[in-house]
Image (tube, rainbow, N blue to C red; front, side, top):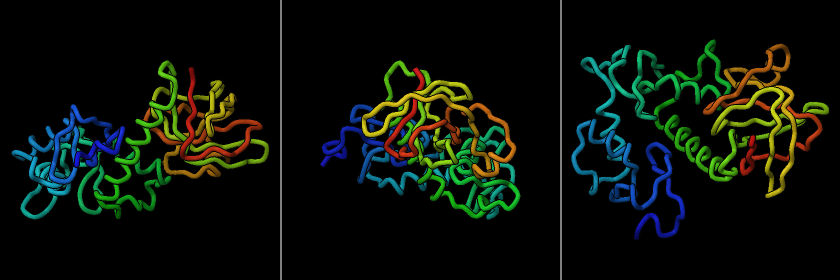
Length: 246
């Protein structure tokens, strides 16, 4: 049975990118995108058609971790990130069983508000980061598809809550950017509401409460998590909702 028969949209299980039957590379138990097929080839792989997703992933990982004897090199700057496939470019963060690039490190810190003082990120393993990355890419694809095609900026909602008379919405920006003073449109259950952003905070290792007590408003850009603060709207927004700017 084709992996596409029951799915209008299929996501690459290695990187989370959206693929379709025309640009997919079939494996024994699924399909991967062209970029990950190339990562597999660059890591020394041959024909992945008879291999499983896990076997292909293991080949990619083995080909991209630089080792000195049995010890992972402390400066893997000539390799690529085993999560997103980007070159390390002189910036890498070591986690429990390998390295991730600066972009993937930022994603993890933003998603879980991990700062660098008592660094829990050091104990995270590659499989956990990979799961987060795939989910992150899928939500970005879905958010962009759900917004009008001419929207300049799009974010998907993670959560929302009240702060006195204000509503705070935790978002991840899928496209464009959001800043203080922007007029946005929020979608919940097909209903549209408009509101103005009074504060925007990037989630960079701190909780909302810590930001509220002194950090100035900033700009949230594509790929960043953060809080958008609004006046007098209901805190009903959740994972199926999006926010956009026309």
